[in-house]
Image (cartoon, rainbow, N blue to C red):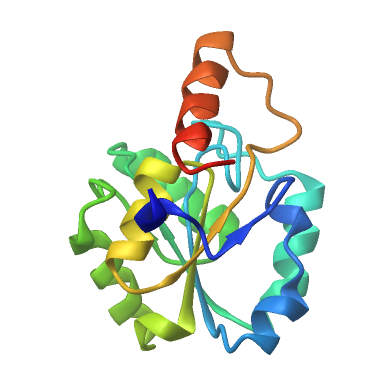
Length: 161
Protein backbone atom coordinates (compact mmCIF):
# COMPACT_ATOMS: atom_id res chain seq x y z
CA UNK A 1 0.00 0.00 0.00
CA UNK A 2 2.24 2.78 -1.24
CA UNK A 3 -0.22 5.49 -0.17
CA UNK A 4 0.53 4.57 3.48
CA UNK A 5 4.33 4.35 3.13
CA UNK A 6 5.87 7.06 5.32
CA UNK A 7 8.39 9.52 3.95
CA UNK A 8 10.65 8.65 6.88
CA UNK A 9 10.44 5.34 8.77
CA UNK A 10 12.23 5.68 12.11
CA UNK A 11 13.36 2.53 13.90
CA UNK A 12 12.81 4.12 17.30
CA UNK A 13 10.66 6.71 19.01
CA UNK A 14 10.31 10.44 18.38
CA UNK A 15 13.64 11.15 20.10
CA UNK A 16 15.43 9.19 17.36
CA UNK A 17 14.31 11.59 14.62
CA UNK A 18 17.32 13.47 13.29
CA UNK A 19 16.25 17.11 13.30
CA UNK A 20 18.95 18.15 10.85
CA UNK A 21 17.62 15.71 8.23
CA UNK A 22 14.17 17.30 8.33
CA UNK A 23 15.65 20.81 8.19
CA UNK A 24 17.87 19.86 5.22
CA UNK A 25 14.79 18.46 3.45
CA UNK A 26 12.94 21.77 3.79
CA UNK A 27 10.59 20.85 6.62
CA UNK A 28 9.51 23.96 8.56
CA UNK A 29 6.57 22.66 10.56
CA UNK A 30 5.69 19.55 12.53
CA UNK A 31 2.29 18.05 13.27
CA UNK A 32 2.57 15.59 16.15
CA UNK A 33 0.30 12.78 17.18
CA UNK A 34 -0.02 12.95 20.97
CA UNK A 35 -0.65 9.69 22.81
CA UNK A 36 2.20 7.16 22.58
CA UNK A 37 4.15 9.52 20.28
CA UNK A 38 4.95 12.44 22.61
CA UNK A 39 3.53 11.22 25.92
CA UNK A 40 2.27 8.01 27.44
CA UNK A 41 -1.38 7.59 26.52
CA UNK A 42 -3.68 9.76 28.64
CA UNK A 43 -0.88 10.56 31.12
CA UNK A 44 -0.09 14.20 30.28
CA UNK A 45 3.45 13.42 31.50
CA UNK A 46 6.42 14.43 29.40
CA UNK A 47 9.62 12.39 29.73
CA UNK A 48 12.96 14.17 30.09
CA UNK A 49 14.09 12.59 26.79
CA UNK A 50 11.12 13.86 24.79
CA UNK A 51 11.37 17.27 26.45
CA UNK A 52 15.07 17.50 25.52
CA UNK A 53 14.28 16.57 21.90
CA UNK A 54 11.51 19.17 21.72
CA UNK A 55 13.82 21.86 23.15
CA UNK A 56 16.35 21.02 20.43
CA UNK A 57 13.66 21.02 17.70
CA UNK A 58 11.77 24.22 18.67
CA UNK A 59 14.20 26.69 17.04
CA UNK A 60 13.79 24.90 13.70
CA UNK A 61 10.06 24.22 13.43
CA UNK A 62 6.60 25.56 14.04
CA UNK A 63 4.70 22.84 15.94
CA UNK A 64 1.15 21.70 16.61
CA UNK A 65 -0.45 18.58 18.09
CA UNK A 66 -3.25 16.76 16.25
CA UNK A 67 -5.01 14.15 18.35
CA UNK A 68 -8.09 11.96 18.13
CA UNK A 69 -8.49 12.39 21.88
CA UNK A 70 -11.82 13.99 22.85
CA UNK A 71 -11.10 14.89 26.50
CA UNK A 72 -11.00 18.72 26.55
CA UNK A 73 -9.60 18.94 30.10
CA UNK A 74 -6.78 16.55 29.25
CA UNK A 75 -5.99 18.32 25.97
CA UNK A 76 -5.85 21.70 27.73
CA UNK A 77 -3.41 20.25 30.28
CA UNK A 78 -1.26 18.87 27.44
CA UNK A 79 -1.30 22.26 25.70
CA UNK A 80 0.13 23.86 28.84
CA UNK A 81 2.73 21.14 29.46
CA UNK A 82 3.97 20.95 25.86
CA UNK A 83 3.61 24.68 25.20
CA UNK A 84 2.12 24.25 21.76
CA UNK A 85 -1.33 24.39 20.15
CA UNK A 86 -3.47 21.26 20.40
CA UNK A 87 -6.26 20.21 18.04
CA UNK A 88 -8.35 17.45 19.56
CA UNK A 89 -11.11 15.18 18.25
CA UNK A 90 -9.37 15.21 14.87
CA UNK A 91 -10.98 12.05 13.47
CA UNK A 92 -7.71 11.03 11.82
CA UNK A 93 -7.16 10.04 9.04
CA UNK A 94 -9.77 12.62 7.95
CA UNK A 95 -8.17 15.51 6.05
CA UNK A 96 -10.08 18.13 8.06
CA UNK A 97 -7.81 18.12 11.12
CA UNK A 98 -4.63 17.96 9.07
CA UNK A 99 -5.80 20.89 6.94
CA UNK A 100 -6.60 22.88 10.09
CA UNK A 101 -3.16 22.09 11.57
CA UNK A 102 -1.33 23.06 8.37
CA UNK A 103 -3.27 26.35 8.22
CA UNK A 104 -2.45 26.98 11.89
CA UNK A 105 1.24 26.56 11.08
CA UNK A 106 0.94 29.00 8.16
CA UNK A 107 2.89 26.71 5.86
CA UNK A 108 2.29 24.69 2.71
CA UNK A 109 1.71 20.93 3.07
CA UNK A 110 5.11 20.29 1.42
CA UNK A 111 6.80 22.21 4.25
CA UNK A 112 5.17 20.09 6.97
CA UNK A 113 5.94 16.66 8.40
CA UNK A 114 3.36 14.63 10.33
CA UNK A 115 4.93 12.56 13.12
CA UNK A 116 3.02 9.62 14.56
CA UNK A 117 3.06 6.00 15.61
CA UNK A 118 0.07 4.70 13.61
CA UNK A 119 0.19 4.07 9.85
CA UNK A 120 -3.60 3.97 9.40
CA UNK A 121 -4.29 7.27 11.17
CA UNK A 122 -1.22 9.51 11.35
CA UNK A 123 0.62 8.43 8.19
CA UNK A 124 -2.44 7.93 5.98
CA UNK A 125 -3.93 11.25 7.09
CA UNK A 126 -0.64 13.07 6.59
CA UNK A 127 -0.21 11.60 3.11
CA UNK A 128 -3.79 12.49 2.17
CA UNK A 129 -3.14 16.09 3.23
CA UNK A 130 0.00 16.36 1.08
CA UNK A 131 2.44 16.52 3.98
CA UNK A 132 5.56 14.46 4.52
CA UNK A 133 5.21 11.74 7.12
CA UNK A 134 7.39 10.28 9.85
CA UNK A 135 6.45 6.91 11.32
CA UNK A 136 7.91 6.31 14.77
CA UNK A 137 7.54 3.54 17.29
CA UNK A 138 5.77 4.17 20.58
CA UNK A 139 7.84 5.74 23.35
CA UNK A 140 10.41 3.42 24.89
CA UNK A 141 8.89 4.01 28.33
CA UNK A 142 5.51 2.53 27.37
CA UNK A 143 4.60 -1.05 28.20
CA UNK A 144 1.42 -1.72 26.25
CA UNK A 145 -0.89 -4.75 26.27
CA UNK A 146 0.01 -7.51 23.80
CA UNK A 147 -3.22 -7.00 21.83
CA UNK A 148 -2.21 -3.39 21.08
CA UNK A 149 1.25 -4.50 20.01
CA UNK A 150 -0.36 -7.05 17.68
CA UNK A 151 -2.49 -4.36 16.03
CA UNK A 152 0.56 -2.11 15.58
CA UNK A 153 2.52 -5.00 14.06
CA UNK A 154 -0.33 -5.74 11.65
CA UNK A 155 -0.50 -2.10 10.55
CA UNK A 156 3.25 -2.06 9.93
CA UNK A 157 3.03 -5.25 7.88
CA UNK A 158 0.41 -3.53 5.70
CA UNK A 159 2.95 -0.88 4.77
CA UNK A 160 5.74 -3.39 4.26
CA UNK A 161 7.75 -2.72 7.43
